[in-house]
Image (cartoon, one colour):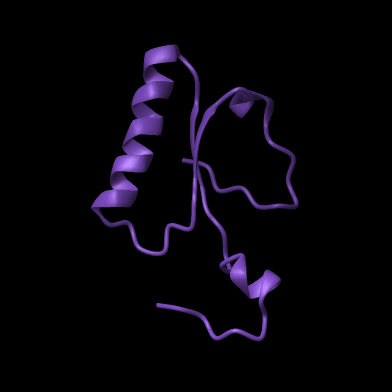
Length: 70
């Protein structure tokens, strides 16, 4: 597993990967299914798998005056 942030370019080894993108605010069964499908598809096609999330939640940028929902 590799931890990347917005300050780094995507490594060449991850280019063309299958990505599960979302606000994984707790890794419940639904999130596990999304990530699992990306991993399955990546293995099936011989590509890298990537799980990407946001911190903080994008709503904090687009609607900063609205309290966070939980």
